[in-house]
Structure formats: C-alpha cells, structure tokens
Length: 200
Image (cartoon, one colour):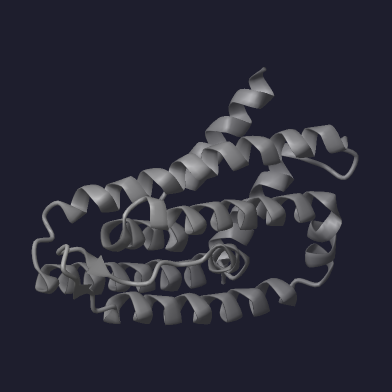
C-alpha cells in the first residue's frame, strides 16, 4: 500500500507540473474546447506510458550503456518542441459565424509524438523506473506503475485543458486570443530551454 501511494504521488507531481504537453493542452483547450483536445490528451497519455513501459522493460539499460543517446534525444526533441512553441505563438484564430475561433487541434499521433520527443517525459520516466522498478521487478509491478500513470497523466493533462477553457471566458476578441497564444508560445519555449539545462 505504501508503494502504491508513493507511485501515485510521484505520478501526480510529475504529471501536473508545467511542461510542453500541458501547455499545449491549455492552448488547445482555450482555442478549440475540451472535445477537440481529447485526441491530444489521449495521445500524450499513451505516448508517456509507452515510454515508461519500454524503459521498464529494458530500454533504460540500453540508454544507460549509451549515454549520448539521451543527449541526442534531448536536442532533437527540444528542437521539435521549440518549433511547436513557434506554431503556438503564431497561431492566429479566425472568428467564425458562431464567434468561436477556428483553429486546428493536435491529433492523436501528434499527442504521442509530443511525448516521444519531449525530454521531460524521458527524464521523468527514467527517474520513475530507477526509483520504483528494478531489473528483477516482476512485470506486474511495471504494469501497475504504468496503469497508475495512465490514469493520473490523463487526468492531469485534462486539468490543464480545462484551465484553458476557463481562460477562454476572458478571451473576447481575436486580439486577446493572439496575445494569449503569444504568451503560451513563449512559456512553452522557456520550459524547453529549461529542460535543456536540467538534462545537460
């Protein structure tokens, strides 16, 4: 029970904290609403849990033996996320007849890729596996850890999407949306640069 509680707390703290995936969920929630944010939420959750599972299943050993792989992933993933930050900042909502912004929302695959190219996801997963799993750990323990993270991660990203929907109530004009998108794009870029520093 103590182990289960510790896993849940770890999953919550790392999932709810600000990061690229959560920022994108907030922007999408504000611009597109919750329903259209679901593919991003689902994809990001699947993406993270798949990383966690593969690391627990042995990929972590390979990464530890070839440390420069982590550095390569950090720079490739960071570059991709900086591109997303630019896209978010430059997003220019068009107001339709119903006065709702017409913008594209991330797809399921894009949500998965956001995690697979997210240095924070790999750092958190490696930390979680090192603390709560071992090379001798039974598959059941790994599946339990992945199951906890699936639930907590989905709920946490959803909370950020709901935050975006709440913010939407004060975004009355295209100018407000543009300012919001610029701010969130800048915040996303800052979190990516910060990740470079903590992983370097």
